[in-house]
Length: 205
Image (tube, rainbow, N blue to C red; front, top):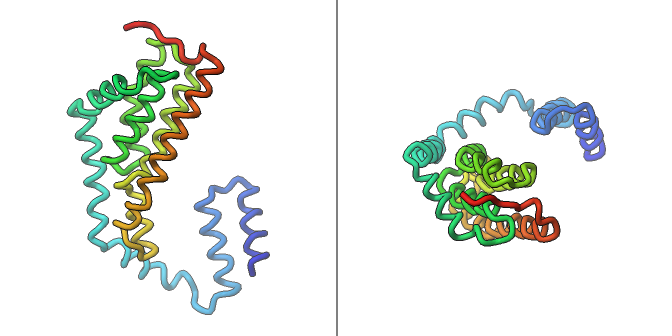
């Protein structure tokens, strides 16, 4: 069964099918071959049970909080604060991008919301200060991924519901990896800008 599952999965991925869809097709194909209980008969029950959990109320609240922070101008002030704290490091505002993404991730719980919000505030600085555009945008994209790791995370809520795992325990487990990942992102920027100073050229305001 394991060999057949790996072969089917690798074949679907080789055809360029997205991972989520490939896993779905894999489950259905193995279901008809190896399962005694048809998967399609239990999908409705599984979807209903997981969609009625009260913890799901937290998801739209996190999204709403992120929108409030953006529209009220708090996100811009938070970014300016990170500029004052981290702007002296080699790479300047690119460290502020990662730091601001880390802070915003701790309020929105969404990678998309984190990258979109901090990107809206930070993008005008690329041309103004003459940073290397690819590296600057890379810090925004990488920093945005912290939204699914640093609590509160929407993905951790969904994972906890689907696997019957304690969400508070998942949150506690996400802090250290999230902070370590943010530190590694910043270390990468420091190394890149130390060896190639032209990538971190700044103009005065």
